[in-house]
Image (cartoon, rainbow, N blue to C red):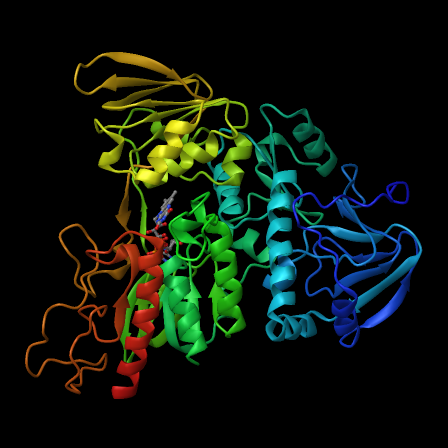
Length: 557
Ligand SMILES: Cc1cc2nc3c(=O)[nH]c(=O)nc-3n(C[C@H](O)[C@H](O)[C@H](O)COP(=O)(O)OP(=O)(O)OC[C@H]3O[C@@H](n4cnc5c(N)ncnc54)[C@H](O)[C@@H]3O)c2cc1C
């Protein structure tokens, strides 16, 4: 079958550039050339730390579900093109199999040597990184990689789909209620519907795995791999935490970055950030996060995802952060970057509809799920505006439901202009959602004009909610001072004369700095901080400043 498909896939999106002769020569010095036989497997789905392959002659096919009844060729690449995608650089296992389509020749470069070349040759590094980021998006769009099979009404199926979406794991969702392929796949795997959800990862079947089990199966960094002691622990891997991680590691601090869900935080759920410096045509939050993760890793930072911080206590001159799986990490400096989590609507039957039709993010994964459907979006801020513009390209029509009388009360002008320009968007001002309607899944929402009390029905198969967020600070257990709304207070007040300014209770005369919390050596950055700007650029800036301060403090202690 593969030998039949030897026509090269056209490069419509710039994801499959051809290397120049000079680039191939530079790579040849780092690897070895070898002949390929038709049908030869260069690397398999599920394999980690594969070589970086450049096709020198013949064609190589990229195959999803190799060796299964669902096998399909998703790309064919000829001379000068290189193989692989983001997982090669992040250490995740490969999401597909590469098979030589005919007799030819490849150049195989060990991935460690590839990293050296990327670090030493920025033009080549940019070319590979750009292609790999695009390929990840293409894989997600194709529904390649993992298979999640379950009922749309199962909370665990929803949890697994969300985890895959937030971590940008390419996957296909097979809904037992609607997809005939789902039952066939279950029969084949010898699984009954009541044993679902299941995840098929590289031919392995996982029955209702926890997020941590799924993470381990795909090669995400699990907490068990953390060092016993570090100089810096960053809790939260949104823009603020990623920035602290990049700067901490680049200053030579042994840095650990934890996140309970996925790297990228709220920004990772944003389809397009248009006001971040240096990206005039905008950048998706996922791409920004993926780039930052690679950058932090390059400087030696260690990640743990999913790893939920549940406690923080003093431990001699250090702080100990307890994690949800019972393990802990210690460090002399801690950066709290746990941001904020979405607020939920106060309407009946929300929990029921949350299992299949209510979303708190509008990324490529959600867009695929509601393609061609009417959708409603609640919220009057920039996140709602972005979601409106993005989803209007995928949904049949979008209704934006806003409580305020004017969009300019909460949305930036550039987004209002975009929302007003889109043909399939209707904006309902002074309007609030009162009821979610539908028997099995969402069919419509009942809304009310908050001035006249008039009710109407808005058809919607999916509801997207962007109505603000509450700080993630419960895990701090009272160790650091919070404001009346639960955000972490930083800087500002002078420490009383003689009060301890070190975690071990001693006093060195150090004054609390601008991003430092009420506990010496613990800093708070980004949306979790009282009075923060709630912007990506501000979060990134604060992450960098906190490291400077942590460094100075560690030197002074
Ligand atoms: C849809 C959307 C679009 C947006 N668009 C823009 C935009 O265009 N421009 C702009 O400037 N801003 C935008 N914002 C706001 C911006 O994303 C936030 O200001 C920014 O993400 C804040 O970064 P942060 O790192 O402080 O926190 P967050 O991004 O909230 O990240 C916090 C991280 O901490 C993790 N965490 C929480 N608790 C724990 C715990 N106990 N243990 C371990 N980890 C934990 C979370 O999982 C999360 O990953 C948008 C927000 C949303 C939701």
